Image (cartoon, rainbow, N blue to C red; front, side):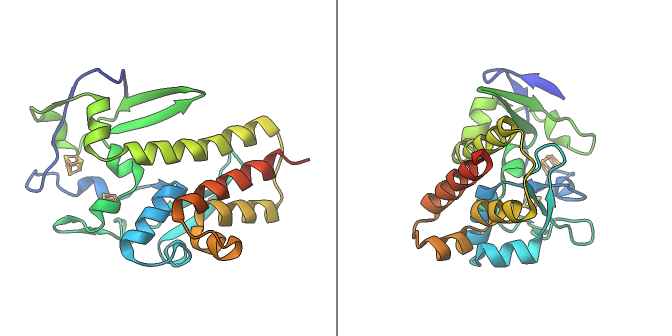
Length: 209
Ligand code: SF4
Ligand code: SF4
């Protein structure tokens, strides 16, 4: 992994017809953020509750003690990959948008890393990008800003030093990841407002006591 400044240059292109097409959609350990879950569910026209049940598995993060939602593979492939590519392209989750970049937030600082995996031939293409331009081109800005809100919860949990009870973890899972269930319990109508409120509620919960 190579760290890149927002304006550093890298070569990359990805398109149907490239020999490695779809190779990156196999054998993934793909953690989804609350905003990823919301967007994918909306893209599939199902509720977040249905999406979580049908397509994800749920864990507790070893480092954070917070709920982690992972996309379940089917026969070692993403359930949304087709011969023609991603069937939910407009709603694809953050890691798929950013690839071959990874974005890491350390406190207030954002770091980008270039991932070079042997199977991915896009690095040999001529087109030049900077992380800034790539993020914009892939429609990832909105995802990054919503994901940063969720990062506030991770920071709050770290600051609190608390170990959460099972019922608290369940509450946070519902408030952050299952937006439709949270909406039905709070009567908030707007998706984004509900997601923001769910994260705020979870931050208050981890900072209580
Ligand atoms: S492996 Fe790389 S170049 Fe090939 S389809 Fe995936 S992202 Fe694109
Ligand atoms: S969501 Fe789309 S881009 Fe991401 S792994 Fe699945 S098929 Fe590939």
